[in-house]
Image 1: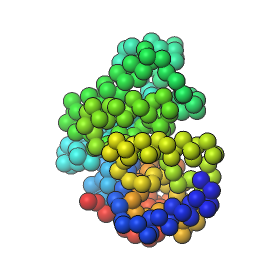
Image 2 (image 1 turned 45 degrees about the horizontal axis):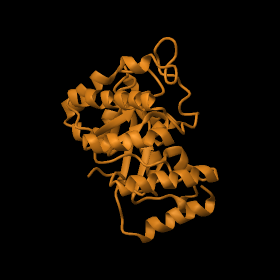
Image 3 (image 1 turned 120 degrees about the vertical axis):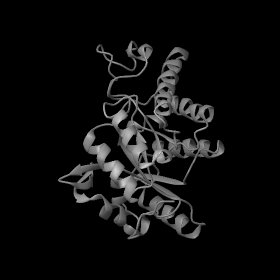
Length: 267
């Protein structure tokens, strides 16, 4: 996104009726330092919701913590196709997605996945459905869908994720990030198309989405504060909650800076 485009984001946010302000933490269930930071941030109201990784080692413990705090309805699925062990045996045998050890290859997010064959689409749909089913088997209704490394916005995967959301009656799917200060014309055109399609299906929760680093790169007057999903990555550091992408600063202060000094609230 160019500086001019970022300014238009700010203008629309300030002049249009206020929409939701979501602060969503990714990577719940990945590692204990992240899980504990996210559950604490959820409980305190620092963030509004979180996205859990069903194929990671800390998943079951994260589910137990969330249930103990009564936070189940504020957890969505952080769908994974780029890291860890798949839940389904079929995709583990596919060299398109996994290495010789049956682990997800880490390059799917750097490859532009324009096309998948019918069998490959079945493998992806089956794996993502299994991750969602594991959540529901552990008492999580699934508040929304997003993905690790934004693979759900890949052209050949986005339709699969939208259909899965409709099939499972998950209310929202994360938009393609659209508040970057610099982005290629190709990305801006595609992300706009992707986000319009989510809105047509009634799956968009907000008009804008971006990470802490993307928002902090904008001039203060260009930062959207309404109708916006802010993506964060909490982690415990010396007993304090920081963001994994911006170490050395308290997450609460970073959120306040991104949102123009406002205090996060929980609906």
